[in-house]
Image 1 (cartoon, rainbow, N blue to C red):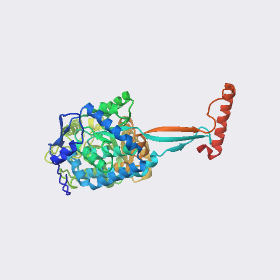
Image 2: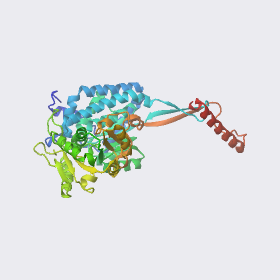
Image 3: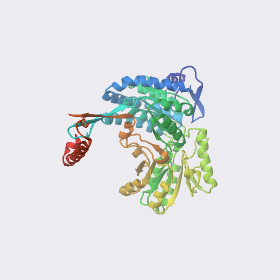
Image 4: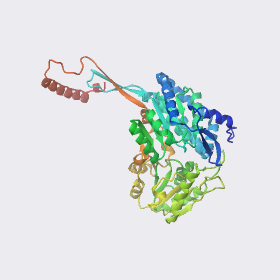
Length: 527
């Protein structure tokens, strides 16, 4: 699939091999996949039916039975092998990610490295997270209480097109380590990268059938997938997330949802303009702004506004657009004509309302059909579409504010709460300001990578940005069912038939007092 030099090669053999991983009960209509760089067809995959989803869940559930019995250290070893396979095939993965998404190659690199970091993290830390743990019993020395973590069964993953490799695999890894099976529904635009990822998982030692892929429209496949699995993880728009949550609620299926964002950057007066500008271009234009934690709003204290804006405009104008399979271009393509129309409409609305386009603001068909210039808006009215709705493109507004209090208030004036950043010469102050921002994650003096790459810490949003977390202990605990087993030594905690209830009540009260005294006096309460 690659010549090792970055030139994309994706032939009929590759397409046929990957399509064969989608198991359907009979012939299915083809679903065409487009290459954003050119607008040409990449190939087709089956348009699966609800029955195909049910059978994929059945296969995963059958394979999960033996997978869950394997020692957790063996499963962790498979995750390390996943990291090895991904690194060994990185150039091929870069090509395929770029082919289906149109992103710049460095953005594809982020996807590959994230999988390696996630696999390594859960292989090292996951067994401890899953280990049975002693809990405080009802009565010191007499009650032994242990918490066990069992796999939920089969996990459903509904993943988006913007980061199709990292989200599909990095969400699957903790689920697999916990002993679950997985059924993945990739976005319609990016099925081949998901299928290639499953090949690599199986090459690393994941049993065949344990991870299944169903291809097709979410409107058709989402409901049977949510109904059939034991936990669903969804990453995508808030509107689609509400639908998934409603279906999960009806089915009593546990769910974690990472949804949209209208992420803000707070720039304090003591921030270095050049350093801040370098960070802002990364936060605003990574993956052409098609990133759920991308910066779309920047609030700058007035004393620094002019210098920060000038540096940001200069850094933005140095970003190179390109449709090549190498590390040259900084910014790639939007995913589709629909996404281009959204970005164009947000910029057009801003212009009509009197906003100033400091740089960018134009469609670039000379580069590729869906390319759009990195764009900075100023004087953007607070009720403009680009100020209130997620653009999901390379468009960012810059607004002067009187002080940090106003910046925080403006940043928090949104229904979303996924990510934010703070820029300052005083990191301690930055942390204090960051804690006031109503967002699931906040990065000080970096756009997003420092937070995202902190795999030991939870990642997710508040408000309309979702529920649940990925990464860290919480990122694997959600794929487990906790079970408490309490063993009572001596007599059971029941009243003997010969003892009147009045005396039993007095004895129970005295017992509680005694237990409190023991726990406050000695470490016996931990037994």
